[in-house]
Length: 587
Image (cartoon, rainbow, N blue to C red; front, side, top):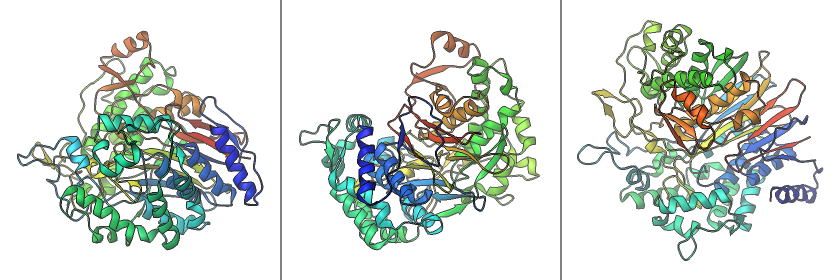
């Protein structure tokens, strides 16, 4: 099927009068290292081809990102969409400028700390919170892409949205993953109870559309045409915003999302968080994502152990990675949130971020790691004292953070790089649809309980606030400041662990990117050790358990897509076999 997609893409370019490039494809089955100048790695072949089409037309990495996201919104609606949010890292080698863009959703003015509490003060059930209309935040991805495009884009929106418009009108084939997601959420979730979602994803008998069914989305085509005709501002002041607000308010039974909420939305440029690890500069997203700080903490804690001396993939290496992760997640669950909530009377959010990454603080935390036995239970530290400040420790977060999301990595012909993680949060978000799009449920990434053990939770719900995220897009730089690679993953709170595993396998274990992605997923997003089903034999499981780890095996579907530039100028590409994505390159 992928080869047919690629042939159609080449025919399209030829019909448009463009020079026909030689497209080399990889499906994640083997590492490839052909010397190629630009690359698109994304979670669906049609999305990757849309990005490649923009690059072939002379577009930038940001141009390609817009095309990729617009198609993903259509063909992978269970994971991301234009009615969701995202974080983007962008690197421009001409200026050596590494920038991050925050397109995270915000809570509407109606939101308050008791938003997900029942009358008796106990937390709402997850599905009641997700599907009731109250979970939808003001979407941020379109505004973020518009900001990045204004600064880094070349092509017009009509060109950028053409592939998505074409597939919405002509239809696309339902993939096995989309079919499985529809089936799961129609039975275990409430997708079948959402009128528009059921009419779109289910047939007349209420059954999920089968694999290969050609699914058309005229409502999404209309939304795209609004964006083409009137520009991205129409998403926040016009028929698109009106339709989203109407769908949310009808589901909620009250006016929770208003025109003023849309008008108030602003994407933000933020400083990325960076640290040197294994001779490379690792950069990721700062709060409101917890991903970047927590990821860097894991890596820097490992450097204070003898992790680099352990045999690749050995039980001791995994044990040390798990112990470093426990400590980093413990800090994350207390300190990281929207920066507006991370500060106090005595310190700022930047102060707190700095303290969490201080060598002296990390040395003290790493002293808790024992090479022979697991600590199992760990608490957050006291980082702010390391910069001479005092403050009350916040309460423990209580947000469910289920896995979903998507990631793509892009490099254009000028070496500009985009690493972008994008999400509607839960599979099919709130299960609500408007404008042919799945609406996010990102507000359930806030803590359901605003106070824990008598202490206010930093990630509590508040009007205008951005919920904490785990999204961890990464750009890796060499010592001389040139690009080494880019990657990221979906997976809820496990995203951080998936990315950390891939980085240590790549940089410490000297694996190719594909081999690093293929390594088992072993993570501790909520304290207990989760091991990917059918990846460790009994002997290796026993070796891990000998450290005192209690292990639960389950499906851990990461979705890492990325590339690495090798010393000889080749591109080492990686596509996670656990999903349906591809990496496409053009020489």
